[in-house]
Image (cartoon, rainbow, N blue to C red; front, side):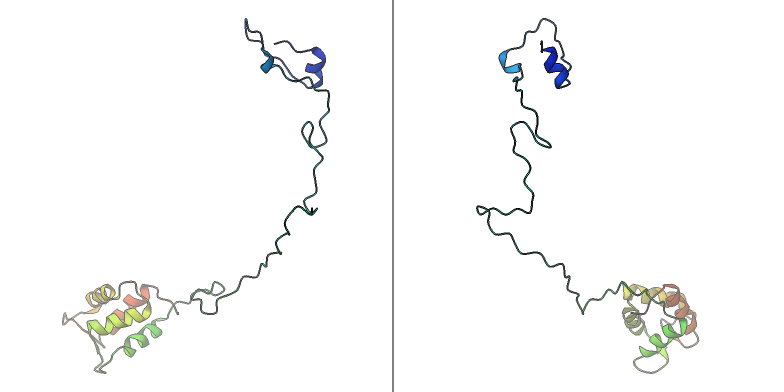
Amino acid sequence: MSYSIQYSQEYNITPFHYPNHQPTNEEKPSMCNDKPAAGGFFGSSPAVPQDVWFPSNPTPPPPRSYHIPSNPLRTNNYKSAPVPLTEDQVRQIFMKFDLNGDNVLSREEIRQAFNYLGAMFPAQKARQGIKFADANGDGVVDMSEMEDLVKYAYNLGYVVR
């Protein structure tokens, strides 16, 4: 490939020579003397500002509203942090679910209490709580064993909802 020296210097082209290769007419660049427009290609018109409206264009869309409506019924409030329950609050919740008032918590009453606390699997937590707190092995938690059940539930880290 042989370019003119003026063309090579003007457009900063360094020719690459293949051995025994003569370029065809399709491989030769056109010898156009036009200078590129500022910010454009050869023969292109100057850039048109984006805010110009032409009659052939459709009407522009109305501006978007960036108001994001808030849902008053949402359950997540990211402005407040969860507050853990105290041992006394956990004890009051378990006593609230002593439905028959005999001061003995059955497995079903403990399951309902864990469901109220927000356990993922309340029946499993009730079984584990009874296993942890039931010292005499009768399958229920009475007032003498209540403290161990409260400590078990408190250490699970339930929060105020």
